[in-house]
Length: 420
Length: 115
Image (cartoon, rainbow over all chains, first blue to last red; front, side, top):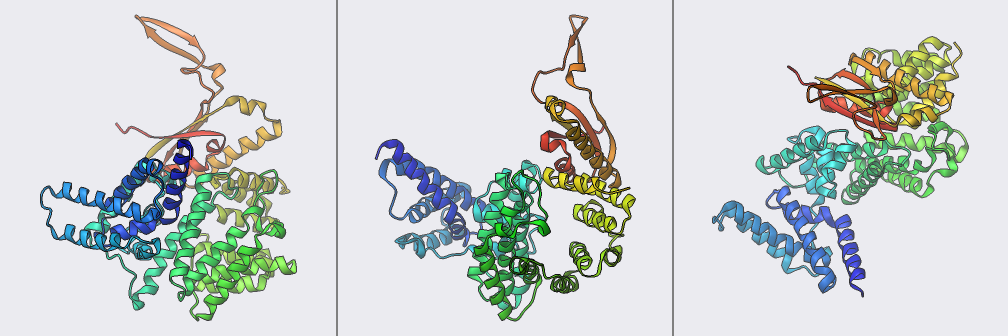
């Protein structure tokens, strides 16, 4: 192998390990010390060492084991330096014991115990500020850098970096346990983990055109975490429900833009462009979830997506079922976002006037003044009831609140066909 | 806190658009202003004439030197601004992302220096 080819091979192997196993290695290295930042630093030095060593000496047969051994040595170096002489400290001993056990048995990657879910529960702990949970999970479990997370969550890279550092300090200093909660606590804690995964997915999904590589990657990473959660907690219906929801939404990615890049609303999408494999997988997950006999938000949202998919088989969405599902979802979480979608479903069954009435009670909710879908929905309902002047104004606000140029053009087009 | 959203873009692109496209582009800015107003965040805003109308002045050795054109020649130039009053940087960034200028150029977000 030429040295260039050797370099490329080593780099590719390291990249592949980084992509698939990063979180597993961080989770393992930080499981005992709870020092995530230290584990990340050690691992990044181990990857740098791999890129220097592997092209010269060839890729090791067990790259994960190799990285783990090097990272472990780095962690011990860090700990020694920080403790300046206090080598026999209890924490360092614990670190050595735990890592020794693993390094001794570095024969296969399967041998490294999987603590990723425990780490996710730590990151989504109630003691960690809610808005940093999703970014923290993305960084710690997937190695996504702060600048990329900052772009996706519309925060400055410096601020995001500081928040992540603070959150990791808190993980270590507050003694947040790295473990999967006990049965009775699991249900309430799982919600935060799933919410964080869904937040990452929603941020990735915001760019429906898929032109923004940062956002598209984020949606993929969130799907990866969703699969992981469903795989590790197959008896938790909400974990299955979330994965089903994300798969249903992801299945329609190719249909959300026409050939010219213009936005295509759900009702006008070409069902032939939907990914049938993902849809089938989602439907199977929902069936498994419902057999477990405990309904929740993500199963309901997954079921809603499923009712839309009905159109693929019958040519028509199942609006009566959709209204019923929104009723259940509204009773469960009372979110204004749900109420807006419920109103739009009511329009399909009972007409625009009934839908406007259903939305009337939301008008006083201050959170909605800056929420584009509220104004767009209102505009559409007003247009249907021939209140064109009001519809025009509502479209104006919706257009001003939208950040995606394609959606903005779509709304402008809707606004322009109003007859005043 | 007050922030200035400084809109940088290539003015030639606008001049090359069809009248219908220009109208749509301007309407998007009007909608953005309207949304800012509705949210009670708008303090002021203006669109600037292209840099072909710009003149720069500086004092060199006590004498004023007047030059045609903008301060710096570059493809993307300052074309307008929005002065907004919002809770924090995150809120300012979220408005900047909605600004049509973020799609066809760059929006620089600068906090106002409070004296």
